[in-house]
Image 1 (tube, rainbow, N blue to C red):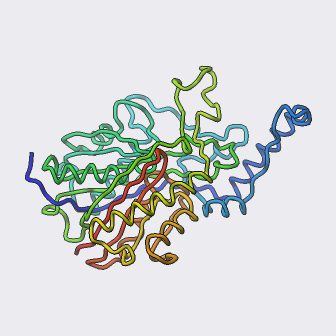
Image 2 (cartoon, rainbow, N blue to C red; image 1 turned 180 degrees about the horizontal axis):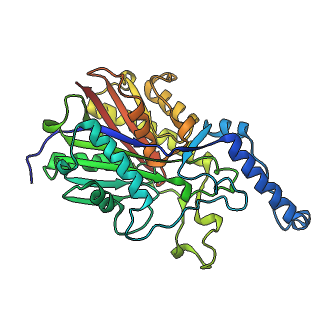
Image 3 (cartoon, helix red, strand yellow; image 1 turned 45 degrees about the horizontal axis):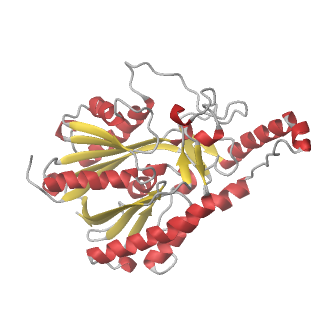
Length: 376
């Protein structure tokens, strides 16, 4: 145990995969699959036994989501109409896993930015939606790769994993159980996405982020004070991922569509927007913060329309790109990492004393808010 302290965000880190898929590429691949499927099942479709698949378009994707491209770990197999799923060589048990590798890269970036050595970190939390395995914990593998003493564990609260992780890390600092905690969110969303589903094949991208949460006494001069955090969960089936053999009636149906990511997009929009906006306003009031004077909102990058409406309800006017920046157009939805990418890329220009909000929302439903103030 160490002395209790006030928590701050000392630095963030980001790993971005080098490969990208633009909407035009994605649509060409999907439509080739649709044409092949409809030709193969032409008689069954004519008889009404099989549903005819509808093609997609760049216009449909951008209108539905605001996404124009996304980063992925490997795109060749994703764009192959005969595969449309990730394919890369399986690594041996004595090799670092893909998820741990990109998580470690993001964590090292955060450590460099904070001027911190891994030996000074007490704990690693791997907070993400799309884990590569159940155990050993991804966090412990990242901890080992970094050379961190102490402890690590995984946590999954879907798209809110990072904000839930930040509050957990802040609580460790406040309680004196740690002085320096890495919250790492590696998201290989491409592995859980149904690339043959017209309504969702365009949503996700791959990425990894890291947030270094520390006691203010050891933080660098330029840091972000954690003013307060709030977490909320409400059960809903409107966003779901059943991947895993326990939910397969047929052991050979590992690729069954309903075992991958599915969502009822309209229901999610209708239910999540008011829930999150009210949560932000209520927590701001508890902290004595006027939502209208928040300098910047770093919102979960799920859907451009959702972000626009949430920001408007919080600020009282339609937010500018400066007030509520987006990375959704070039990164896609990166689950728990989305709001952290926005914070990482769009926070350096704020001045000492400026107050902002990191906010996530997603499956569960889950939602998390982290109010921060810049120092230094």
